Length: 123
Image (cartoon, rainbow, N blue to C red; front, side):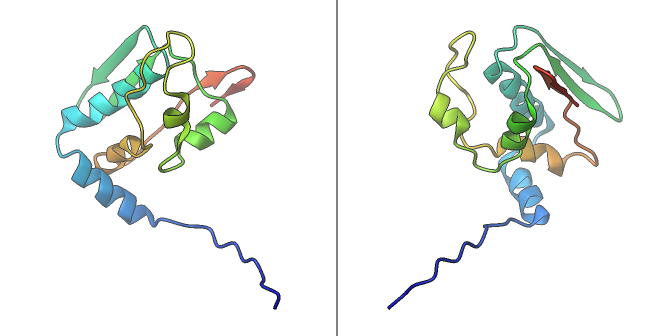
């Protein structure tokens, strides 16, 4: 008997991501900590956090991301940090593990932007 292989991608509705973020991080300071942790994992030696009435901006001098790295960043549950375990430049133990912390920001903001540059790629 022949069996056909059918690949069906797993998808997650945006509303579930936002709900997950709300449950994970209920306080604004936790959202900022999550973004700062991402900068730390990217080997940043300088991190600047600006908070005002309308915006929270986290800037760092970390490794940056290529297009593939940016796609991986938005991959829920990406195993990349669990595989690497240490940051490439400073060999820091990775803080993030499951790739879901960044989505906590979606529950607290109307717009979420990532500006990055690495090699010949920039957003």
